Length: 181
Image 1 (cartoon, rainbow, N blue to C red):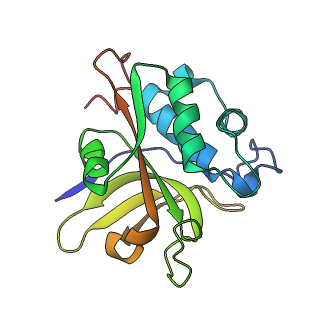
Image 2: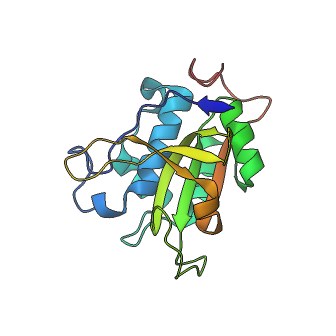
């Protein structure tokens, strides 16, 4: 079974992102991509730089607890923002909502592992359960390169992954037409 959301990615190295923020803007870029998907770009009206400041980005990256806490504050009581399990993350994808995914071999003390990324936030946008579980992400771009869809095997990276779901409560405002399918 394969599920892949049609999410527009964005590069953390885009010319509209402050050059001082670019090397560590993967978390804010992930928040930007997900909120634009859920609510539509016109409804969000925030830039990656705005998310960087709002979420408390630092030169060494964005801590999970800051991402969760500040996204909760930004979205308000109609939304639940929390870390979740793999099964809950896949259920979010099936419900039409991307999930924030963090690779972190340093704080998970997995120094000998060779994951796809040592430390990086990305939007999780799909999965394929045909044989071995494969996850699909937008990679948040690179210098002079837009974000692109990539895939990797969950088993090869499981020990360094953290999932953060952004789920509407019953009273949540209407979302973008993509996410309401």
